[in-house]
Image 1 (cartoon, rainbow, N blue to C red):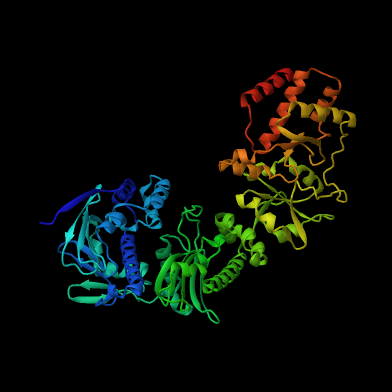
Image 2 (image 1 turned 90 degrees about the vertical axis):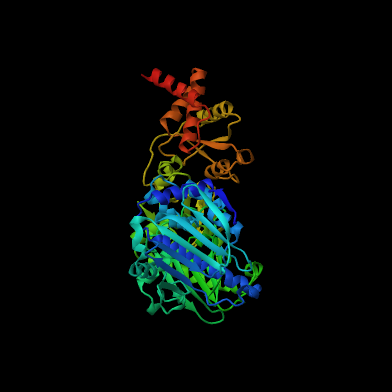
Length: 618
């Protein structure tokens, strides 16, 4: 008697099953897309494994996927003759989710089943979509090279059973016992429509077995191998959705054949929205690589630079051997040449999309934070990347380009200036901009982490240096003011005394105190010294646990024309109540920190000092 073993689903699988079983999802037919996609992957894996182990396909017929509806038993089976699974594979593939995938999936659950079910395919757990339409599922499978077959069974309620199954062919047969309301998936016409819509691109035949009749439902030719003129927008859309597990339209579709020294075919997509895991370090990245239509890998990172990691698609070439190894992929010059061609074509295609400013703005809001990494990484293509980048600025609403910035430069301005920070609105009101505003000089407002790094390597454009506003290499003496502050400055003697007092009170908290003409309306500001990292970059380092390594003291700047600084300087000169002067200095220092987005070191003390000043003022 065959022994049956019972297993509990992993907790994350339970969450997936709760979603799909309880979902009234309007696209329930996606279960078939997911199961056909898995079957196609299984065929690709066997075909690839057979390159080094030919015996695995000895006596094996052509690859195919067979759909068999049985109205009497109310079952639908999806059968393939791919790689198959042994007992351990069934446990690992159908009972658990890979650690990184499970964590990411769980992190993005919203509690709304209709929304959450859309995540299933994106996180590689599409098999469980079968439970949207099935009250129970049986999986019969025998792995290529094994003699023993296995049966996996579950009703999706929290556990599954595995037992031995004899006399199985190599491959996998998934039998769905359909729920009462989903018997539509037993109708041949419905199955034809679903396969045509979602899986027509699958390169192996998808066959409908209806009684004694067999009917091939898909064109079983690789979409990317067809001429562009033979492919419709609907076919591109359906292929994109099957590839990405998204339900939207691609923002960009690029389909071409490269001929010459290196030949390959490419079908590439940029999605409408950024994927949830775009910044996850363990995310599987890369295009799908085929060699003569034989699937090799879907993790070939060498085909795209990191700043284009949001691009998805297929590359098919005959320039590599079918048994190409992972190590060879990492070092072959063929991939480097293909990559160069891909990048050139993509940048050209993206450039054409900039003609529609509104449409391009959507792309930039989702992918600009990644695309700008190209300014740091890809010096070879910098002249193509820079015009595609968009920036916020102190002078115009919305996004602007470097070319537009240069066209607005005031007479006498020689450089492009920028400031970095976490929040756009905070940057717009940063006191350090006041001196630039007074001269009519525009400043780029940069809020992404990469903005701290790319100006170090991409530091000149169209003959203009790209400098932070704190850079000492600036001279505005020949630029006429557009906003003049006609107030007199604090007398020099008082300035000296005030600087000495501020240094004394804030000793250990600041590096230096300076009078400045950078400020126009504000009394104080903080800035990094020459050679120091910016305040924004230091904050980023602290967020990544490097607080001690990068802690540094800043320069406190005082505005000698501001009424408050002048009164404070006179009070120091007149030796007024020392405690009030000291409290005022601390308040101004905390104000400068707060403006930079830095936390108050002593919030309670700050409020007590402010309240005391308010009380005295009233």
